[in-house]
Image (cartoon, rainbow, N blue to C red; front, side, top):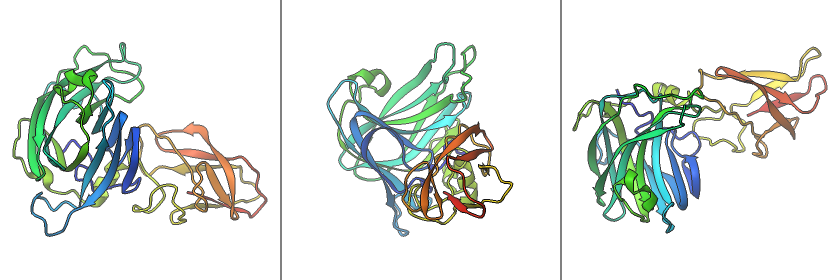
Length: 318
């Protein structure tokens, strides 16, 4: 079974691109770029249905454009946090993927165990880096990595421990020990058909067999879900999917909205479908401020309106 969710980059709930910038930002579902100093843009690249360079009939690849800024602490990386640091502990795994670049250049692959906030030392552990050479043509890579045991390690209580699958694209000298001295570089990098498999399995093709879309989407929605249509990014001026409520005489000004499934660490933002402004709802075509109740859990949340409504007035939550 593929340990990477959305490894074919088929689901992009937040939208098909993120602009050039820095910091930690999600692109395709479950995948994020994280950069300091250097900047990165992420775009969804569509494959032709007739292409044969990457097997498995993928629909999309993920493209990262890196603008490197010189500095020992500057970097740009792309990857996925895999829930539960215990996953694969003490085992050999194979990270398989297809990749290419605009010109021949190297990247570094790392699997890093993060023990989460609240662990005795808030520690993380790298399982070593492997540097590989990309060309302008699509190539398959199978990287075997030994994952350290977590026996005797303190794991935090904040439920954010994970195994990080990281592709380093640009790295200042402060990261030499984590990147096999990759160095700094600008360029365009593309990834497709990513899989993480138990054991030493170079050449394994089973992970390329696509899961049904409802199954893949359900996996992603443990970490991110939205009321918008799948192809509509949050904050868009679109009323499809809004929750509508009509004020009745005995109603409170709290509305419970359930999640589709239990979420790991939910954070919720509401948008006005008429203006796209965050933390607003629409009340008869006017934006009204809203805040979320502290009753925010794995299963859902309360919306608390900052303004009382008259009987029979409607409000719309997106």
